[in-house]
Image (cartoon, rainbow, N blue to C red; front, side):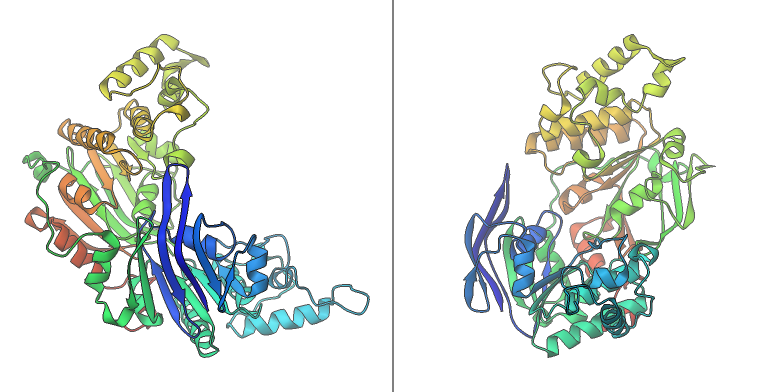
Length: 513
């Protein structure tokens, strides 16, 4: 029904897709999986007309096509449901369902009565009973996702792309979604299904394509691929391939005998975290392992107050962090280096000096006046200590390399003298030399007594840089690796064989293949 051959797409400095071949057949559910940066989103955007490929051919229903806009793709019969609901909150449920294709009467005016009846029928078919005249924003996220699903399947689509469709759904809604997918399959519709939840993939999908670094590394029937092999393909690590070179873990007795600096207990966020608990001692590096979407970043943000929790508690040096806010966490001594440094970290238009001093300014001011001399001393100290390469402290941070931008962020939080440092993908997108410097710096910080939480999609970096590894799946802790058990093999087996979390398909009655 829809296929691509030799597809390539390049952005400045990044080869997002490289000679990708992919085929979605009528009456099949085809899983498209891979870690962050694998190229899944780019491929979906090419298929749905958001991007135009640099090379390669897209064939739809036997004929070459080149969609210029998503609307062209939709009119052709390709519909998409995204993880983030892309509807209009202020409009009614019915208007969202029929946006751009409203039923009209003789004079060309919208026939609201017919639209409301058809919208009600479509939603009842998905087990959702709501007043379709209400604004969409009044519904919960799960109900909004079901409206998006109803819209996608009601446009006479021949290909439906589902990007993490269960991320906001309740177990009952997940069962309904799977029944809809089975119905689509029976009607001969091709479904492209993107998800990080292995249980869902094995329950609902027929085929699987694994992307890694913009290339296809495997395509075939998912039933012929066991879970451990699937995880191995996603991570790019062979079973039994354990490497000993790299960072040397410090195993001093103070890391096992000292009281934890950080203790997080039963952190729960609806649909995202389910009772996550972990602790970090002085001078210890604790790794967070798991596939993309397992809850690693959410855990770090919940600890740092950047993600409001429904329940749970965080203590630093035995004192509870109250308020559940980022300022409260910073005052308690928690600093977070976010995964997306460009969107959530650096301020590219400001100088290196201003970026480093940003968080510390309240402590460097008196009566609203900043002590510029102290700022200069702090900035100079950290630029030398972290070996930040810049024309000077006045250079805009957006002009620096990725590695030096990461060092500027580290300097900002180290200037706060934290007790706990949360590092989310600290070496992503930086060159090999800068990566080694950041890894060495993390080890030095731990040796100085700082408690460090390390999140990394690089399994080798995670294993070699951590004293313990807490493994997450579907927002829940499924295993903790300590001592000789901190190996890549054990990590991959824990990810592949771990029991399902509350949000997974198996937990909602799905089969476990």
